[in-house]
Length: 147
Image 1 (cartoon, rainbow, N blue to C red):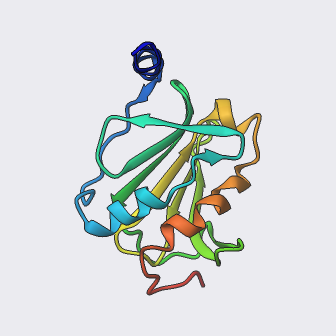
Image 2 (cartoon, rainbow, N blue to C red):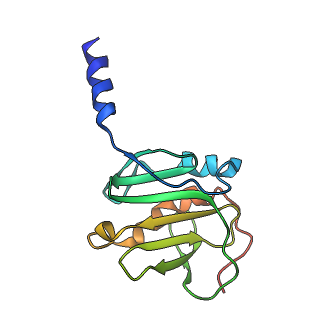
């Protein structure tokens, strides 16, 4: 009984990260993506989120967030790059907001997946750990490729 109380008390302290739900979050492919995300992203532990088809790693105010079901981007050559990994290559459109937040959106997959890396994480970590998400986002078939 004591162990149950300790576990319940510990999980109650775990942070929940607010992540806006994407328009197509109810797409069944998003459930496959979220179920396949890793428990660790780099050295950041996975934490709870408050919305469907989302995941987060880190701490409140300093979390990498993932949303599945965002609108697939139009064809572009700006910022589109293939990111290789052992799970295969995934094309991502990469954008910096000028304030240190990096946004990665899968290209050629519907529904698309968006990953945001805040300045508090990007200043201390390489953004290359998005390759750790390739296995999960590959649950959505790729139909177009970066040019």
